[in-house]
Length: 263
Image 1 (cartoon, helix red, strand yellow):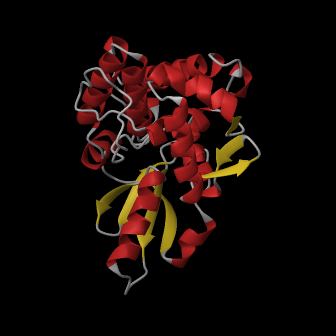
Image 2: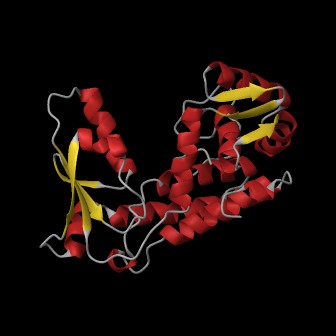
């Protein structure tokens, strides 16, 4: 599902009802991306796209204009009457899939630690590395020192060794105290509950889509901590379940329900 709800919209905002929780209505481009990000493989005939986006207020001419712009911008490829995500957006789909279906393992108390050793990098390079490490659900303890509980079933990228060294660590500080320093869990949980309410109360299909786009974006920031380190009412699983059910609902509406990951 399209995660970037703050994308500057086209002339036509497809949501005509009130948008709550400070969410911006999605553009035609964002609606198209939301549909393609939901299916596997991420490609659909234009006739299916027309059927999918119509409930969200996107007409045929608006859709075709958006598709043309997206192909020209490198967001999509086109073969005959079929449109699919470009390689760049396939990477986004993988990140979103992982946010909804994170792969975890039992936690034995170990922590992943990444210490940045590269020097002389420009601001853009530093920002890009910070984005990469955040996407790995690492958190920065102090400048250049990133860590998290070692409960994710995924390797660190091969290229990371060129700019950092990695360790398996057992901090002396109590794990709950360290988690509290690294992640604003109360704020994340509060936003999650607000988004769940917003999605449940959304007055139109377009507003529901806007809310669920914000939900999947919020899931990208879930640290996916071991259960022992989470607050007792952590809403992460509830948020994932709500999004997965909505994803199945949207895709099933055009008869391709078997193409949602996890179905």
